Image 1 (tube, one colour):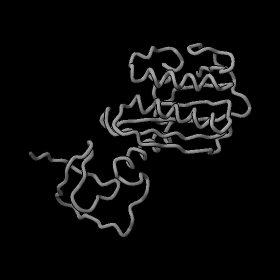
Image 2 (cartoon, one colour; image 1 turned 180 degrees about the vertical axis):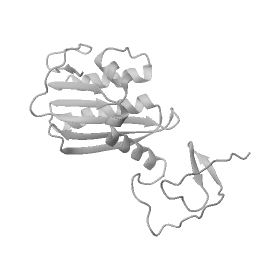
Image 3 (cartoon, helix red, strand yellow; image 1 turned 30 degrees about the vertical axis):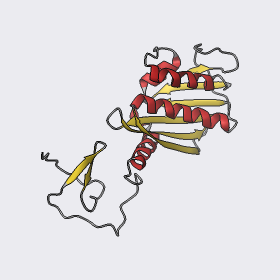
Image 4 (cartoon, one colour; image 1 turned 135 degrees about the vertical axis):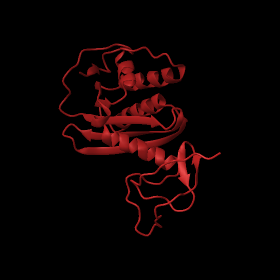
Length: 205
């Protein structure tokens, strides 16, 4: 069940029962993550129109942050896109139960670091004529999750996620290889392993 805020008729913190969306509105699937929490973080936003046609894909690397910080940045990015492009109705879909319930007013925002982001989000929501936010399981948010991971990969220098390895890239035969851990990710010495390669890690000091 989604909850709606009518920006022109509410004050920050007010909550209204669910209402049907207007005929024309955007749907933004958002996700954010941090590898290590805190760690290398990024968000992804996949936006469609009410008919499900793709409108935009947004993603950004955020540096060393927490999961919750990244989730809020994804929400702010979706709100900014809607407002900057003249859209007055936005439905947000997120797999962060914490973020959804905080925006709905069901949970209090106890973290000072998140409170500023929460307040920024509510100010943007108040500029909309219709707003809805709902929680889904991660399986229902796959494209936003992919975009968030793409942002983290790029920020960590791991190249584009989801792109098949080039046929010209050197390959490695089965065997034992060495590498180092950088930002929580194992980086092999020499040529990279193809995507999907199964590995077994043995720690040496």
